[in-house]
Length: 397
Image (tube, rainbow, N blue to C red):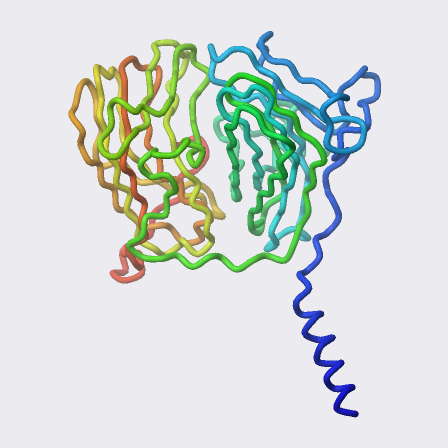
């Protein structure tokens, strides 16, 4: 071949290699909210809303503030009496074609008088009950009954998780992009867009596609893997877990803190019919966490707490949830004290969940500050031959 022809061929090959792998088709039905649910005056087809039963929240389809097409959807809330995550959602059933790929969720958002946090969330589940409920077109409780599964033994596992909070009071249309690796056995993908707080948020032009998986990012040793570990920022790096109990509150505190300019404070409540966890955590998502020894450290302060506060690490694996007993609990009034927990990440870990948590209902106040989550090196069961942590079966946690 002539030298100029070789040069042209080389340029074509380089150009082809530089083109990223194309995404698959959009798996979301009615992604622009243009189609109306049959028999309903305005509800967009294929989308669900969170049924809170509260008259203070409004879901709507907007024709004035839109990103594309004729419609967008919105959720507006005027009360924080109960902490609730009001959201639009869509559930997509998937199979082997999605395994070992990256799911990419994009959506356009617009804040309008927001006080609190809006969010977009992408989840990958192994959830046979939901899958069969959708297949049979029956409520989830009916599917549980048909499958002979008690509620407490529900075997669903969250295998992939990526939430993005955003709290600016006013924004133009902003494109949000979320990505999760889809582990084998995943059979349900869920996308959610919503609000925790008051104000209005609008959403439009959503997309869920699958792409070739990116390599798991390297895990540095002796390095804090948590974002905003001292709560110096806006707090949006953290997941907020609060059951819908009246009076339960979580907010950054710039008056009482261990270090820096702020801490995270919780106000407890006596309201609540069952014991539940409240607190903050982060999802550390990396499929190479298995076989590593990790350490969680955080400072805890309590004031007249009638329950128990503690730090804890949960792991999500292909087979289920894994967690070890917390080494220390805090109650009543205690000064700033550092809580330290070292455990092994079990084989097949997809997500580690470092938690700062307390049990409710309980009155009193709790502060958390200056948190770190580090990978120390190989797990003890790798270097010392000790038994790995055991999976916690549904209904036994």
